[in-house]
Image (cartoon, rainbow, N blue to C red; front, top):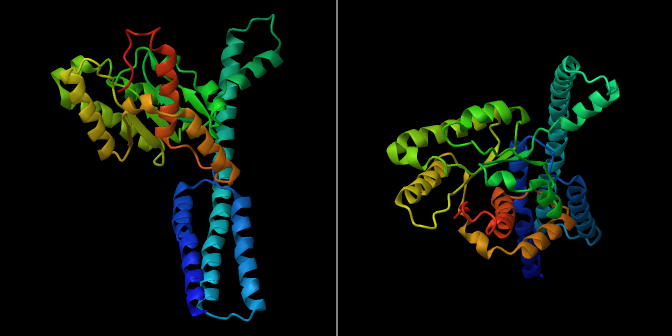
Length: 321
């Protein structure tokens, strides 16, 4: 019987090992988004049922202590969830004030150029539709990336976050920091996929240090805007094995590692299985694990679509490798 108790305690330790890590991660995230309160309560209910069974059977031993320890750790998730909910409400109020200010500015601008065939309600509704949400995920790339229909793919793969395509045909590493400040910073993104460098090959070959500094300045600006922002850097395609592009990809990977960002080498996109990834996400959702997709998975989804849809049409445009 003692051996049975030992294995039961081992089972509880294995189940409970991830909860302290989950508490720390949730505390650092400072948001309740992606956390399922119902799932946490379900786990707590299970532990309470186990403790009750032990008490009824008068099994007062070290296994019962492990039950109480696991229960206490899981309960910490409740307190962190309540705290994060409070932070979310404060952030939402700040966003509302920011959006209200933006609405007023937009309405005043529309009023200056007022077409009197439109009513005031139409002007206000138009402004509401144009407001983008904060705490989103951003795709930041060049001309090729601009064609990727992120909203359609987000719906198809059940992204539980908002994603915007902020790519621009004239965007390169050299002007990326200025572009971020003017077009993306006000959204306070929680994640950003960066696919830049295709138009910087010449300047990189002339002065790689300048390229590195420009890229690092962009990442520093992103972190100053939101220190918890997830960042993924995407490599550049090199079908002709150009030495400058190969060297650039090595630099991009090193920059990603130094900035603790994700480096995405999309050569693997050719082997990617969208059906399997989608099934995995649906299983996680069914279990109540409303975690946000890793940026690597998001990149696989976006660029797998681009590779299949644009490869022939835009054969002159290189894809990520």
